[in-house]
Image (cartoon, rainbow, N blue to C red; front, top):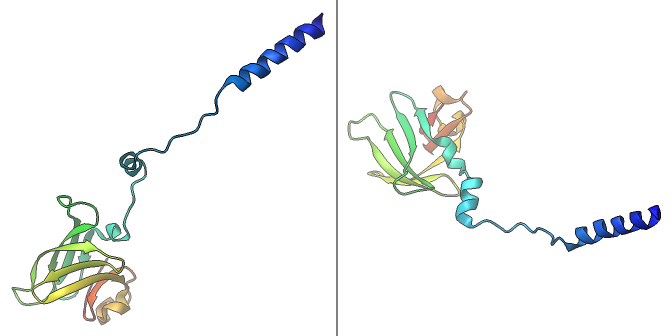
Length: 137
């Protein structure tokens, strides 16, 4: 009689386990995925203050009004009074592309040697526009 009860109970347990449908997780909509795992652009790490030589400076901010991959670059890029301003930039594979009065430019990652400025040669974390124009942390 005990064997019969165990057999019936084990059969019921087996059948109840088979009755459940496997749970398959449904992919979340893209908007939910973006909030769960935000994608960070390499250029987002450049946000903040950067210092050049002889009073030159650069501040990189995200342009929240436009969205992801857009930046505002506030810079003093020369010694003349008119060599400063705030410029809109866009992330590219090479860096941040922007245009200022002296033409289209590309801000890219580099080191002190890449700036071409002897005062910055020891620096490791820099942003370079052209040889002779760089900003480091």
